[in-house]
Picture 1 (spheres, helix red, strand yellow):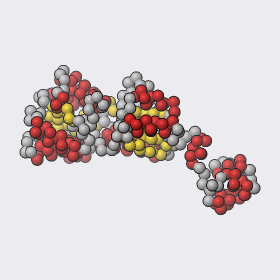
Picture 2 (picture 1 turned 30 degrees about the horizontal axis):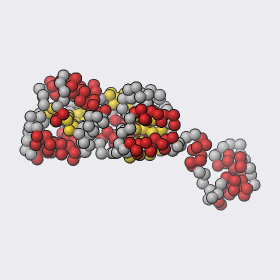
Picture 3 (picture 1 turned 30 degrees about the vertical axis):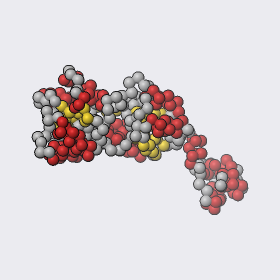
Picture 4 (picture 1 turned 180 degrees about the horizontal axis):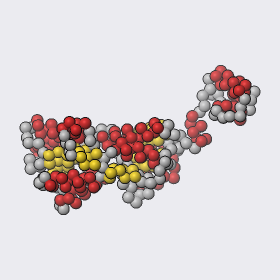
Length: 312
């Protein structure tokens, strides 16, 4: 394999002079530069990008750990991350995880091996304490409230807006309310925030039977709708976890020819606007931008992004 020493030998110039030409440095005459570039072209030489990155201490790669892309939370986050990365001339590598702890541990090890300058965890299966231990090898950013983990974080401030949404339902007189979420209470900070907001507003526990999880897509929403149609006719309102999901939920009730519950969506999607659904906009695109800025060290503080409850 051709290397810089071969170029120096064939061109008759020193390794340091060849290096200056390859790295586009000044203080090399036009004649010398031309002679070296001719040898480079003849040998079809390309610099080793990995070695170059190691020598300058940066890869300009950021890994984004992504359980899946089925929910707008993840797609909007990635859109924001990609937009910020493009502006900063960084590469983004998507690292699928499915919340698998072994996979996430593998990605942390690649950070230790300097494959990335930083990792952004859009969600995680490993404990925050485990992620925090790897900060010595590179920046690790999470997309949730960091509490006392010491991890840089940017996240949507959800609880206040969830309270507003549940207060709206209470004002309308709804007392039997269903809630849809992606993951169960023990595993998900989002589900915990939703349940906590309900209990703050109604001063009572959310009945576990009304909390349906495993919902990420329109089809999941339709399945959840069938579940509520068959089992809980008393439910008159449902806090869904996406406008598209609310659309799927609605289809189940229409198919069963049952009166529709009052639906609240999330993420301000076109389907919600078309149906004029109340929705919560968490501005996840902006969360993604801020996560990337934290990852490359443009800001050192944790950033909470206010969300909005919108009555369409």
